Image (cartoon, rainbow, N blue to C red; front, side, top):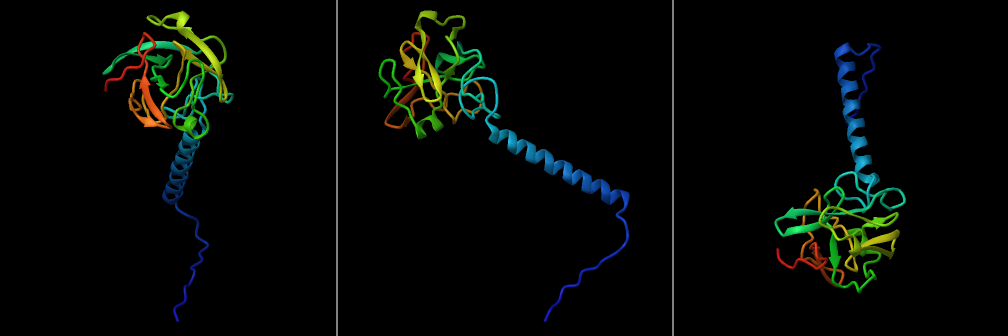
Length: 182
């Protein structure tokens, strides 16, 4: 039979051992803080859980909803004020979102706390809002606007052309129409 003995000493750890322990605790706490920040979904714009710490506010609505233009490999596309790509869903009907429940986890709506503002090159008269999951959802040319959770950086267009939740998703041209290339 094998027994394990515990060695007990009254010796205090050396300064070197104490420094290594403090360093280990510091690294562990920093890693824990990073995990907590990544899971919190806090931030100051709209959407949910995107681009690192996430753009959603606690209420889900944006403080200043901006629709802007950005050049991409697909041409000029609509983005939010931080350059995050905005998409339309082909299953939506004019002024009505058909993305609910699990769909909004993959495709968070671009929410607004007021009237969306147009950046340069964006037609103000095309902007609006509709009632949506979590608040007023920004629209452009009658299309409800969404983010794609798979985009990790501003300007990413990894959701382009995906067929999910019953229809295809596309980035939006300055005209308000889908960009079907790419």
